[in-house]
Image (tube, rainbow, N blue to C red; front, side, top):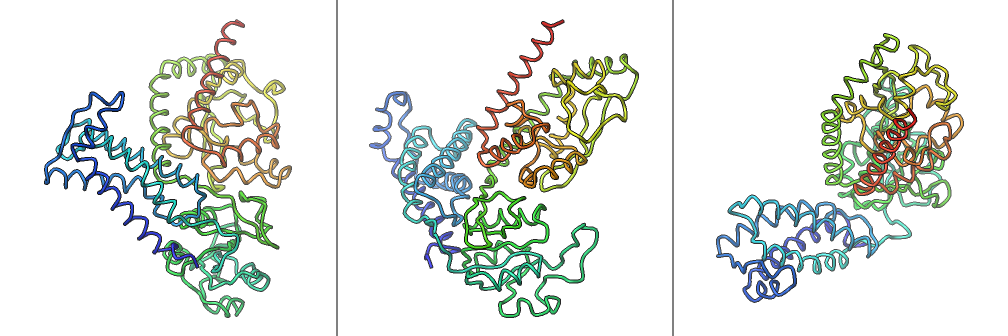
Length: 473
């Protein structure tokens, strides 16, 4: 087994990175290095600042804490290619450098001088990627230690009997629920007599709630997932945990319709294709969502008042229309829009707006200009939606789409969005195959910068539609 797995990798990566950060600051504090940095164009106005012993220790401690937090993802033993390792290390390092620069902006006593910060960042941009490349876990074509993870004893027993993987044990929740999730089942998968001897030949390693620790404690390379419901949070949570620990996750081919997979594997098992966001990315995305929703509600408040008056003057009906829609992991939430149709006239069958005779006069204008979507900013604030993601689908419409496309649930991996890759390409549920293609593409390639590109494009489309609508009148 690779020695740089599990806790060994965590110790080596975190300790080595800490030593490099401290050494880089110590080197950057030398007058010669400071003068060398100031000879670089654009940096020649930076002052040469050498810290005293006490100030240097405080600056080292501050920088170590900030950079370590930024590099946290790299302390997990995920197998990566060389270029991926270098790219991720540099992105995390520059995020830490920006945080340190922000501390310096407020002129705290424990800040790094600007020249020292620049010199430290330049040094770490060379040594840190080299260090993580040197100790990285290389992607292995085969695994040496595998574990069964799930809540379906029948499937786990079947996989144990048919797989060639060296299974060292199984991990299961204390209680599993019936398919309708209405009540706990007595046939629990918790390692007792309830398994009827189907997994007696391997050890019960522990509960699903301890999956993080168990993967590390037993140096697991591969996890075979066997959940009764592959479209719920427990399944995807296990996938994300496997990713965080550099553990290859495999699923049975019967789950391929609802899981993002690579399509490759051996026998009945196929590899998942999961790259969940790091916590730093999630914080940035959530912060952007909140800022966008608040700014939108404030800026559009006059428009909201005008729309409310127009709807009331048009037919006197309710202002808002609520609908249950599918959220992340197949959960549901209620979304609100400005009412654009005659009350109680909705149909779950996807239909083009141009052919829908139930849309009101004001509603047709709202839909054409996308202004009926404004109340969904509230769903973004509450956390049920994001600014960018696959569009939330009406739960009744979802049934029709799942009947037509067996792989439709692949969209459930992320939060639904106000806009998305499918929307900016003018693809709706009336073209479900193309819509799913765009949604899966977004999930596989999502990043904060990708989100910004989609938002800019959507804003441009909305403004274009507004101008076109005004000009037509």
